[in-house]
Length: 373
Image (cartoon, rainbow, N blue to C red; front, top):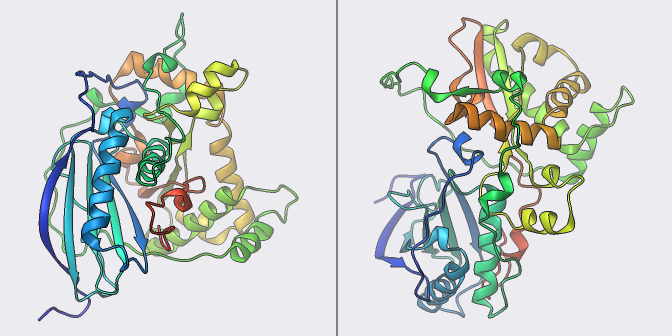
């Protein structure tokens, strides 16, 4: 018997998928912007329905063949671990079951057959050489190969696109956002606490609800983006979970992609190459306000604070300065990831990452678009 709410899977096979063609050995260095990421894995999940006419074995075979073809161009992900699983007693709780744990390498993929006739494809990437933009490029190319289409966007691994300036210019403002790892105190042993664990939830937010939030946040005459507004809303929601410490500082960071920013004023060739750049081109600006202020102030005020801390990080100069800063202090880490400091005023801290431009509908391996992703 399976306890209510528990999802059980049985592994039927594990394989390593290599590139279809023999590849010469590649050494892909981490760029300065890669060096800002901690050793963390990120996962994505795509669910497909009504796939029974294809057969699970045939679909797994198609995934393997297409991946071997895609890895010729995406050699940074080569030798991928692929797991086939069968799913029993499906329920509402999928925690850790459909998206695989990665034990080695850069990418692990899991194909799971659902009893309802559907299919789930879960992927786990090492974030250090792969950001969401890069992962999306690979997933779309993988789907292209499965449908015998040419790869829609060949990746560029040219780390010279992120070369530092000559002479370099270290902006002291970045000291507020990032910290050299060499200056961090030794890590403490984690404290076992049954009440201190992550809980994952998925919510469906309609465009009408986003538009309503946007109207509430622009009542002062300054229109804010949907990302700014929804992030402000999340900031207020998280603050309300910590009302016992309403004078502490609650911090929120937002991931910013720098590709389009670095292309400002650039030539056409540089813009083309940056559009296909595979690697991290991210910055994580953050803001901090007292818990009681975030709760009590109107949404338009909170959205203004979000806009203010984002404003200086969405420029070409910010990313050029960040490349130079890492050259002087590598490796480094965004302060939002380490709780900023040991001040008694430190409260909750979290990071918002948007998937607005994630091309879910294009991850079609030949049995239809994902109904959930």
